[in-house]
Length: 109
Image (cartoon, rainbow, N blue to C red; front, side, top):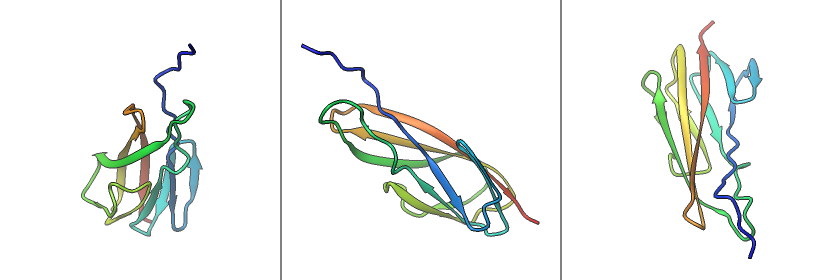
């Protein structure tokens, strides 16, 4: 019997209008006040496994609204100048959970 690791792979993509810089899990948004968080590249590498739920939350930063916190992809509105950290937690069909964080820096010109 093969044993598989209790592992989920999470990729967090961040896009923003007028995106100035994107490097790994860091991004810089200028002026727009909104961004899109995208966890669609997350996957369960175990045979037959799949991601069954997504949960976005804000770890730190100013006030903002995560429009669809239970969706794979969500806009974030109301960003103001500063640094924000967002966390994506995914759950697999095998009830495994994993989380990853992404940093968004908003610079108002």
